[in-house]
Amino acid sequence: MKYIFILACLWALTIDGLEINANKLTFDGRIIGGNETTITKYGYQISIQTDYKHMCGGAILNKHWILTAAHCVYKNVPYQIRSGSTLKDFTGYIHDVVEIVVHPNYNKSAEYDCDVAVMRVAQPFRINGRSRRKVRLTDVGQDMPTGSLATITGWGLLNEQGDTTQKLNVVQVPIVDKETCVQSYKERGDTISDNMFCAGIPEGGKDSCMGDSGGPLVDEKGILHGIVSWGIGCGRPGLPGIYTRVDSEEVRNFIKYSAGI
Image (cartoon, rainbow, N blue to C red; front, top):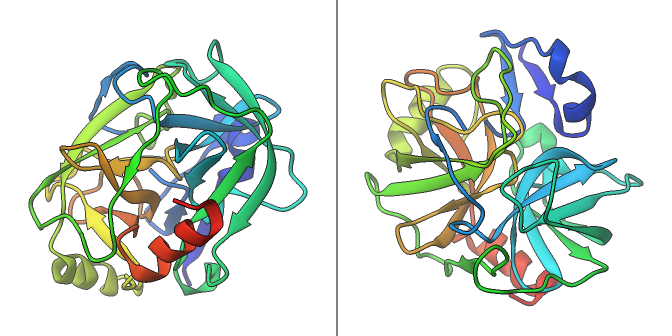
């Protein structure tokens, strides 16, 4: 039996009691092996919060909308977005979320296929090109080639033991061959769909982790190709992180028609 471990809405409440083991499949995105950075370098990054406590990451699409993972959001939960801050709990600007649109084909039971959502804020982002800026999205069919370096940012756990960070972190990992990744997860009974891709290093040690979910994966030009989605543990050898494929027609068209991007 496979155990599903979801932290999205429980992040701020249960982190001290977090337990992770090899039998638990960790959904809620997984930064490990990275370095501290500043929001002026990655101004599109935002923190999704409930009761002003960090839950998930996301990226600014325009002055009204942000992009995140579908598994990060729930109905009837009041959310806030913190933008323009290196720190997850202090400074920056707070925006109330007034609308959430989840991909209609998002399916938790199918390994979180189409794990994408957009959120609209009441107070528009004051785009300044530095600490608050729009992310550029890839186009349909324009995926990152195997071996190319991807950049991931977030405020997630620093390791599976539950060490947290106040400052934004960044890590770079290569795109993993799709078939290799499919086989690695198939051996564990998990499925990698056409709307997903994998990134990580064979020996492990660099990855996203709990609390990074919904955050952006970008290429060397800063173009967003992926959304932190799920994986087994954080930075484990032979088990790269799984990301929502933004160049997938099913995903890209959803973003276009929902947020106009």
